[in-house]
Every structure is written in C-alpha cells, then in structure tokens.
Image 1 (cartoon, rainbow, N blue to C red):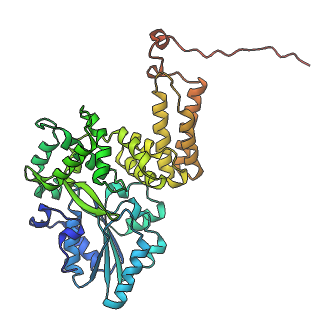
Image 2 (cartoon, one colour):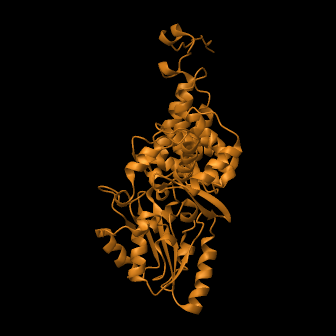
Image 3 (spheres, rainbow, N blue to C red):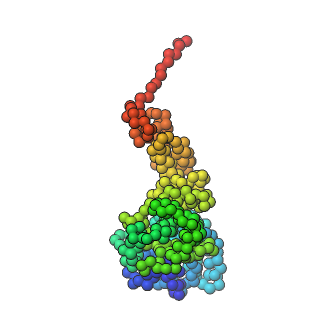
Amino acid sequence: MADVGPELVGVHDAEATAPYVARAADDRLENVLGADRPLVVVTGDRLAGTSRAVHRGLRRMLGDTRFLAIADPHTVDLARALTSAAETAARSGPVVVLVDDAPPAVLDQVVPEVVGRLSTDVRLVLTTRRTSLDAFVAGPTRALLDEVLVTMPADGTPAGEQVRPVLRARAILDPVGWSSLLPLALLRTAVDWERLHVPAPLTPPLLAEVAPVHLAALGVPAPEPEELRRVARDLVRADHGGMRLLRATRRDGRVHLAADRLFSHLADRDAAGWAVPEELARDLWGRLGPEERARTARVALARGDDQVALWLATQVAPDDLDPEALYRLGVTLAERSAAHTPEPGRWDRGAINWLTAALDRAEGDLVGRAHRMILAIESRRDGVVDVPAARASADDPAEREAPRVRLIQMREVARA
C-alpha cells in the first residue's frame, strides 16, 4: 500500500498533487483503519475529498499491506475478488481490497455471508457517495454499512473545490461563448451518465448515439455519428482552458469516457446545472437489462429524479426494488396520471399496481401511506372527490369551470 499512487484509488488531476488539509474525520478514519476492522465504508458528497482521505489513511495505517484495487465496480463479483485476496494473503501476508466510488451494484453484495469472510488478513474498504448509499439498499445490508460508516464532512466548501478550477468549469458549462455546442452536448451526456451511475461503459460509439438527446435540449440538430465521434476524440486528447473535459478509462474491458467530477458536482449544485432529461431515461431503457435498469432507477430516486426513475423502472420486476422505491414510483405515476391532458387518470391502474407491489413487503408506516394513496386514486376515479382544474379537458373551458355534482339515483324496492 505504501507504493500506491493516488490515481489508483480514484484521485485525479490536480487533486493528487494539491496540499492535503487534514480534517477531524481523518483522525476517525485512521483510528478505524488501525483498529483491525475488516470492513470500512467511507461516504461523502461528490468532491468531499473521500478518495484522497482514504488514500492518505491507508498509506499511514496500512502501508505494509498488500493492495487489491477493483478496476470496474459495476461488474465485479465481490465474493470472487475476496477469494483471490485470501489466496494472496495466504502466500504474501494481509491484503486490503479497495472499491472506490462503489455503486449500488457493489453495495448490494455486502451481505452477511460476504462480510463473514473478512478478517484482519483480508479487509474490504469502500468509498461511496451518499446518493449510492441512499439508493434503497436492502435493510440488512444498509445496517452493516451504517455500522462501519465514516462520513466526510459536508459543511463549508467541499475539499475538491479548493483544489479544482471551479470558475473555469462553470464557464465551460455555460452554453454562451461556444462556437459549436457539439462538445457541450457530449460533455453533458458523460456527466449525466456519471450522475445516474449507469452501469454500462460509455464507449465513444455509444456516446455518439446518445448525445442527440442533449443536442436537442440545447436546440442543435444532430450531425452525423462520425462527426460526434471525432469531437469526442478531440475532447479526450485536448485541454479546454486548462481542463480535460473527458478522460478515457477501462470498464468491462472496453474504453469508457468519463467527465471530470467537477462538472457533475456543478451540474447538481450550481445555477448553471441542468436536470437529467427524461429522454435520456427512455434511451437507456432500451440499452440496459432489467437488473441494470432497476439499479439505475434506484439512483435516480435517491437523487430526486423521480420521473427519470419511472421511465427506467418500466417493466422491472417489483422484487428488484425496495418497497419504499415501489411506493415512490406509484406516487410519481399517480401524479403524472392526474395531470395528464386530455386523458386525466390514464395511468391510475399502473400507479395502483406499483403501490400494491409496495404493500406486499411493506412494514411500519409505509403500509398506511400506500393504503391512503390507493384510496385517493380509487376515489378520484370513482368521482367521489372533486377533479382538480388542471385535469379538466384542455379544449373545453366551460367544462373546467362547471361544478361537478355526483348524482345518486334512488329506486324504490318493493316490500315483501
């Protein structure tokens, strides 16, 4: 571990060489690493300095330990990786396995059986974003993660902003000043790929296929795919005002194009940011398998992109989603159904299906919330409650203003 450079643990560019500013969380992390704990999980927001803190802590506390870095956390078989680490430990001494920026695909594998295989000879260290940690990880797994969690502080200016060119990055994200918006559309595509933790590698041909979604959002017609691939190659090779917009890594044996993390950070926090487009979710639906769509939908829900999650979760088996996630999807579809014009209530049955699936495994107050939402939908469909004006027919103003009265016809029943 003492010979491992920061780039191997997910630290890039200026972050790797900037002076390190110690924080109180660093002392706690070093205490945890020095206490022979077999599992350590470190979380924080994007640019919180999580990867740098872990690199520093491991070098200081476990410098004489063998190191195994997981290259592609989206496809790794964690149990198999730990078996390989155990074989190395038997020959050469203790091993620390590090997964940087662990997505839900890794967190889902941290089950009691896997944790039970860890020891002082084989340790597992994970860094993960709060979004991934909150992406509806199964209850028993979340309990294991919380028990060993070290949180990097979120107060004040993130550590990454102190060493990265924030003003330059903000200017790059602004469409004003671009002579051609093609590079910006490619950059936004890569940023949204990272924001959703999409499990598929963003290869140059795939980037060219998906980029028209963001070109349309910018009001630019899509050029030929070859032109987009050429622009993508230029973005990897050249700096833009001192910043590399895209970098090429390896995922699943293929080239993966990723944007600088600072752009993802600003897209979520800065006024120059943008929402993940629903059109991207529609495109991803056809490219990802059901299990991959379920995990990406969970990340979207954790981010608050409920409509994006709804598109991705279409035709996903309910068993692949947590009850709370099913409830959120049902509420989102119910709201969309109520506001649909000119067919209000068009997707009410689908919303009830999501809510019913949530009830199958619901506990605590979720049962009551799901029941109340189902009753509200059924009441609206039966005409028991007033229909909101937003759901009235768009081409009939008089119908919107007319009072809605529910008529009950009484009929006489002959007595025996």
